[in-house]
Amino acid sequence: MTDRKAELAENLARVEERISAACAAAGREREDVTLIVVTKTYPASDVRILHELGVRDVAENRDQDAAPKAAACADLDLRWHFVGQLQTNKVRSVTSYADVVQSVDRLKLVTALSAAAEKGGRELGCLVQVALDAESGARGDRGGVSPEGIEELAAAVDAAPGLRLDGLMTVAPLAGPFAGRQRAAFDRLMDLSTLLRVTRPAANMVSAGMSADLEDAVAAGATHVRIGTAVLGVRPRLG
Image: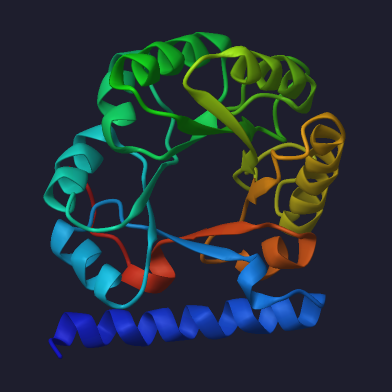
């Protein structure tokens, strides 16, 4: 085993222990929570090692990094999640490899994703990104729409050819009433998910929690956690 593979295996084992303990504490089954490893800034070689270690869900937040990495790993049975703020001029590229876009936060993006998915003959999963720090009807500083904007976007995704509404995503806010209150933020997201599932029961994916707060997300009921640093290590500085 290479040094890097041994390091990643050890880190994965630690994260697995944390998720398992959080599930046990919340009275949930371990298989109810999917680990997504966020591989941004790390090379395709790390993705290949993660696959060898059993990881099947990986995430990226910048198309310029993700597209070549996905191409280099096209032979692997991986599920690619796009989790960053997405500009419409990157949509065609992203839809060529992403299975799920977790950062849907405006109608223009829904229209662009639908057109690209249709052209590529693909069905793309979409999560509405919720910004718990946004004013009513507005978008948050880190992307996402206010809770009041969820229904409009959900309806647009429902009506858009080539798209499938999978659920909701949030990033713990740095400002507003939920700043520093991750569990409260994730509880609020779960409440919003419950409302969404009244009319759209299949949209049951809830993506929340990262390396520092995965336990809070699992306790709240998240179905997917997005873990980067705890698996891959402290990221190198960009630029």
